[in-house]
Image (cartoon, rainbow, N blue to C red; front, side, top):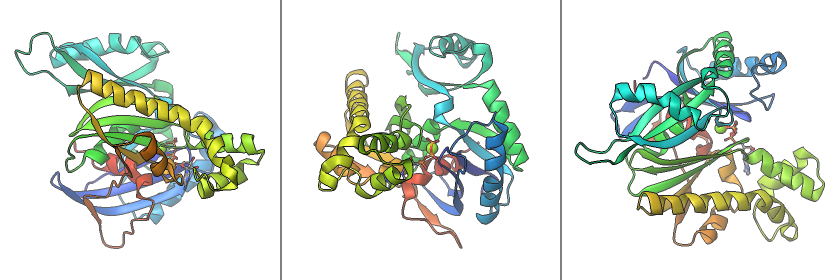
Length: 341
Ligand SMILES: Nc1ncnc2c1ncn2[C@@H]1O[C@H](COP(=O)(O)OP(=O)(O)OP(=O)(O)O)[C@@H](O)[C@H]1O
Ligand SMILES: [Mg+2]
């Protein structure tokens, strides 16, 4: 068993997972758990939020039977700036000093206020001439990271690494190897993360700052319903055209059509830039369970396989662990727990 666990720090719920890796092809889930985020927020600089969520996180750790203190933790995608950038092929040392300049190009705050992390996702082979290398850059505000670390320490957790949801979700769905290119669409509460993964390489990344909360709000506004009821309607009727004369579907599509447009752009990008065809859409996160979402996307992207991803595909439950039916809710937590140091 790894001496650390994965903690997906979500605005709607916290998820934890711990696995025991059997090489790179299979694993056993030794602990798993979920707790609602009672504040619905991750504003850790707000003491009221901290006081609300700290007890839930502590209770979750206790219930899920996790004994280790060390954790790989996700930074909410809504808090970071990330991008894949093409850079001239250079050595690791050169890269280390060049990332700051690259980050300056897309990070909307001064770079000395962010912590920059990066990973090389493609390096052209020696002698490949002027081909560029591809680097995934992620910048997180130092202030937020400090608040996150303080919070985790108060919960009795020792963060050994912090990763973006993008990296974690890509790892979870490429574990064990996958053929072809998969477009992962991870729909959380506040954001939707899109990633194209080819083999185990991240080839495209994009974050939309809308997710389940925006979908619920659209239903609430369009049908003049309170938020709690709109959430019910969303989860029960989803994109089913036969329900309520298609009114819920129509409301959801106000946001949903924007997502479809972004998916289309990602697929086109992959075709023109990477000369590769996306072969499947893998849905993940709580939003993946929107009724009729797979059939809706299946029609919008005829010829592509659309499915809800299973981060436990190569895994099996350990003693006393039950894997709940809504598996794709755990993909970030599982991906974090699969990190190898
Ligand atoms: N059956 C369902 N149908 C539609 N939406 C659902 C369903 N179940 C959950 N959701 C939505 O999924 C969202 C929560 O997903 P998830 O647990 O992945 O979010 P999170 O990780 O806490 O959020 P974030 O990463 O954005 O901070 C909520 O907005 C919720 O409404
Ligand atoms: Mg999330």
